[in-house]
Image (cartoon, rainbow, N blue to C red; front, side, top):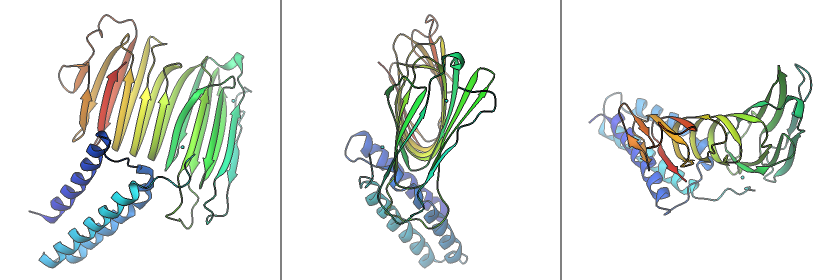
Length: 318
């Protein structure tokens, strides 16, 4: 058997074992603790190329040994609780840009930051919010009289908040960006607690390399929730306050849990490769499509699109 297949087999077994142990609550694995170690796999690939030009058995053993040791370290590292866990009105073109940066990269102390955008009834019909950040835990912490509030427990990186008003649509951009330079492997992650106003119709777009998302959206008018992530844990609960809602999830290695109300009809379209799927209360049709029994008759519908290479997808009804 070719060495590259053995290496990939070991990696798949490793990720699958972690997901299985998490599902049965044997361990609690913090993916954001290990996301920054991805360059190690480039090193392993380089070792594979260097030592296997002549297809030597010694080179094969070295490559496999380095991979096993690396995965063992990641397994240990991922189970360590993060040390620093806590986890917009105007005219067209108006922008608010808040940039708070900690230049001391060596400190392990967190900073508490607060972002607030006031609620403008005249221009609050639809709000688009783009959220991005790596190694960050995002949580929705209830409603607010403001348009949006965000409390950040920050240990590294730079956070910015921007707002644009185009026609009657407000667009918010909340972004976390790593600062280039030296990186301390003992740095903890960041925690962001959002509060959103319940009156507007929301479109939420999240893009993150690794991290955790815990959003109870049942009290909000969510037209679209879109998530793109790498090694992430996503847990969302949808409501049925709009006639149609779209949930689009695209992941690499992730644990995805989605809850939908029983009163809403729901259709799932999945293209999930080697991923595990558990769609309780759904009927399988064909071509990766699943529907709830009340899909055709319900006046409220939720469309879910799932795309993942090696993830755990669970969709349940409440």
